[in-house]
Length: 104
Image 1: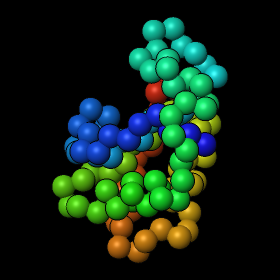
Image 2 (image 1 turned 90 degrees about the vertical axis):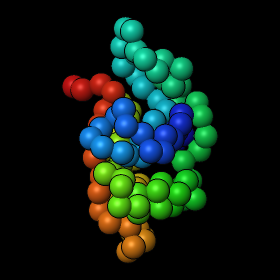
Image 3 (image 1 turned 30 degrees about the horizontal axis):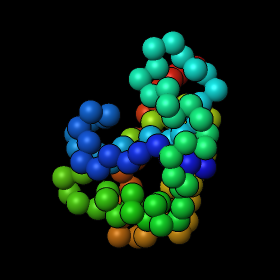
């Protein structure tokens, strides 16, 4: 799985200050999509264990309200699984919010 970008300290994609992960790949191709460049499942960089750990570490500060995942719905489910399955460092409080660019 690839991701298009990660925005740390993002205030545009959920309540409060968040980390936002934009996952690559979409089969919907909605008209006027704000992120059409990321429709290609190969766009961006590979989502690795190291990237996952960086994201989880970014959630630790008290001023971070959570994680926003932006993707088509199937990619979101896979990513939520990848981020929340063990081993997740015990020092990271569970604060996740899954959002999608498209809803079914």
